[in-house]
Length: 123
Image (cartoon, rainbow, N blue to C red; front, side, top):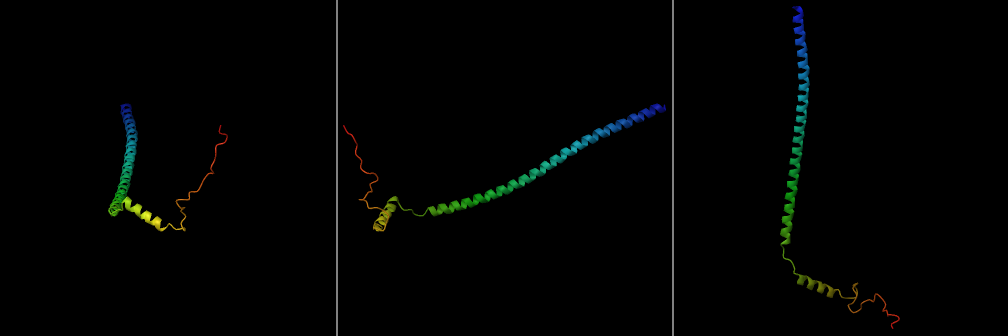
């Protein structure tokens, strides 16, 4: 009878040890998974905060560009001169500066770039 009780107790201890080893291994794996999930969550929170900061910076830059564009378009709405008015102003400026002090050549004196040539040996 002692042998039977001893064998039962040894079997129970061996079973308990096997269950303990198996469950400890599973708990360690679960702890690792939870730790990785927590790190992923923290990383996602940091990336989200960084993205929000970038969005705020981009919105600020867009607002500045819109303000600059509206200011530029308001300045562009000033009356413009026509092409005819600009041409007349340029002709007046050229006529006023038509003295010998300018670097512009007179219209009649066109410089000859190449000497006149004749075809040799015409039959």
